[in-house]
Image 1 (cartoon, rainbow, N blue to C red):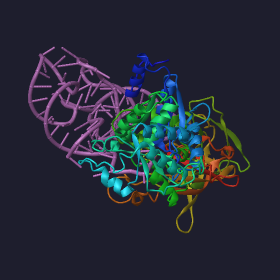
Image 2: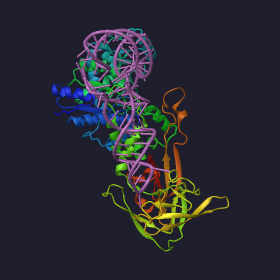
Image 3: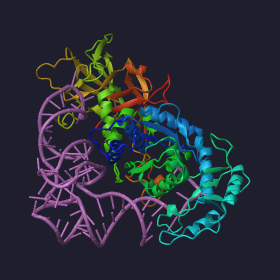
Image 4: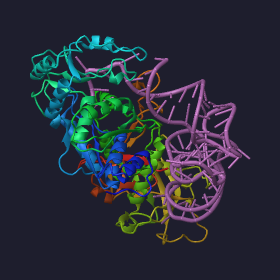
Length: 551
RNA sequence: UGGGGCGUGGCCAAGUGGUUAAGGCAUCGGGUUUUGAUCCCGACACUCGGAGGUUCGAAUCCUCCCGCCCCAGCCA
């Protein structure tokens, strides 16, 4: 039994109180995804919360798949979810749990409620049931099957189970209160017939428990003490409690709700994310523009930054919309602190150093990181011909030093980690397009200030023309053009950003990047943070994803 | 409309009757800098959805009002 010094959110306060009062000896939580899609950033908050609470209080957190609806679930999702939670850095000890592991226990409990006169087989079809349910302002009407003898319900339930009853014609319902102001309490469905193979139990069952009849009991079976879910389940809590109180469970778990994470310019609806994938608006669930955990991973977002971001979020009952800039802050913070530096020229413009011998070649050394000497240094070959970015040169020498801190004709600039150079002449083709720059370098300026009178305008990145590697860069931008793609009229598809992906081919990167592998993160100096794309990159063609730009 | 939940600066958010109303993001100034990055300084709510009331004292307690979110799947 552990408690924490300063509980900072209401759930921690509740747990602390439970621990101190002796109501709970070991904290047990769970993260209960339905395997019907990939996890997204909203789930990350829940994962960090549930596993975090267990960690903080010295308890345990289970990964449990809530697989009570075979219609939507698939093993592909199970594996992806396992990978994502592991990647985030959490461990549930042992095997993941499945609601389907508890099907027969759940079935026994259903029979128990029937025997107790608290559940019955109803023969209303979906439409009739809706009519009998009443409305928000009008009470419902009792089902004509409500007083069916327990023995008969038991017999029918068994027939439903073995597949002798047609889908949609019967359900098992809890007998609670058709006049309850809480619609969830108006004789909710406990079991429905689905003659459909389940990803784990195959065709063993023809009936499947509903979420409400399953969740609390799953928690009880696992000894979950604090069942934390999102706000929209608050109205289900009375029902959760009704089942946990009316069933002979090993323990009584309690449900607490917190506000889910909403991010602007982002969509966190599994259904709609699936639509983006199914309709090929994106390159799969792990498209780097997707807010899925696998998409963020492929994009180059680190697990640490995702965790830091989630931990910075309030656990409260307000449902606000967090600015993505807040998430981006944590991405940059981690990458800035840990990413190796490198240089890559996106729009190469060749320059020739007329006073640097053609056969000369120096190996310059650059820091792997400006303020971390534990990261390895880089070797940068310096040669007569180099590439700089076209955007770092302007013919107009009258541009103010303040406004254009790059190369102009007749003036000096520092090549990052290299020499100071001066632009002497711009060579153009017949269209007036600059094809090459004739420059000269200032000897003795590597790691040294230039002589009196020479004031470089700024620092630009470069690469040796003869010793560099070719690569493609995938520049990503927001997937949606509006802050709330999900709100308002019209489809969210109408707001997909047509410029969310820009591919820049034949970029020139420093030699060392040839050794870059998936999972490593780089800052291409003055350009942004990049990582090798796990899908498109190959030995023949190196492909980098831009995780995020510099500020 | 019945029930449930929530309203503190542009965004997120601490605050649990006595504090100059934390902090982060964003924004705007200034400094450092071989990345227009990082870093460092500084600015940024006479006021807590609104109106009354209780109190020596209210963002915190009471009343009424306003606004937003969730629930009428045999989804979770």
